[in-house]
Length: 485
Image (cartoon, rainbow, N blue to C red; front, side, top):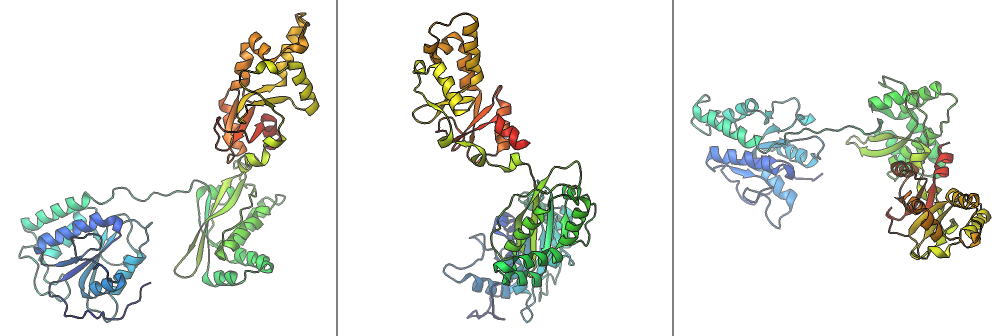
């Protein structure tokens, strides 16, 4: 936080025209400009207005140190208007500006909070604020600004000579409200967790102790310390169902784990150790190692989930807040195709130049399938791209038809081209009933691709999942079945 001396050395006497400082986020510059325009209109430009986001207003000088410029302006300011919108923004600098303006020993400064959304800053929750979203909320500010003799500290006369109930004041209220209404965001912050969510917090003393003990030997002690001390501060409805609890008031993480273990005494608790390790690493300000470990749900209607520490926040008090999400867990969603596929180097396949299908003899191919103990064969071109994927059953059916029809002559010479000529649907089948996924895909995504293609039992893996790339591996329906089981 910037440090300042009690009174800036301006090098000259302060200007006589009152200065009003508009404290705001630069993303809210349109609101600040509407406020500045209102003040200029009512004072006929006789007030100085500090607005850092607009070159037309008084602002930081070029090539000057920013904090010193702000401190000088805040020292002189008769009022600081804080434009406050949504709480999801970082208001640290604006709060600093208000703090500098009201520092003990500085000239009197009035803080005016313009509420432009549902929230107001906690530090000013006890004082009167201007609800800039409604005409009724704007009216008291406009009326007092224009007609009160003591609106600004040290003032002895009103800015205008109008009566509070005069038409001129009513007109000014209507215009100011219209100007603000045109620039104030209409939507409020909407936030909800896409997955079950729990918020935990550890106090500064525990956080410091864990941070200082980073040796490998201290890991178990740190896990125990965090489990005992971490307080549950928020749980969403979905997480309540996972743990079979409606209320979490006053519970520690240790309490929650104990209740889960009591409900499922025979279930594996490996997820507990995995979660605590993540929390320790995050407390030590290090990126955690994610062990994709399943947590059975207490509720029979919920599937297993895996806990992931996704957000870490250090609070001004020194406490640390953790956002823990529970992601749906099955081997299908957790396992990458790169860990399950048959890699191209281990894959039995045939190289084939398009148009040379007459070089592939069917009986020789069937003998090769027997030799390699496989029931399907991919055909790849010279670039490694997939052309066909043929299951043995199709070839067996073709040979069986030849045998039953008595066409035994020349059977050894029958080629893939002959199969295509006799049964055009075979070519369509072996060239269309497979899909593609990228190396980054999971087995669940492979399952989705298979479901979209009629008759699909195989999915090729390529770098980005397109059919014009070399094949990196193959996933079959049999692999999915054994994984799911």
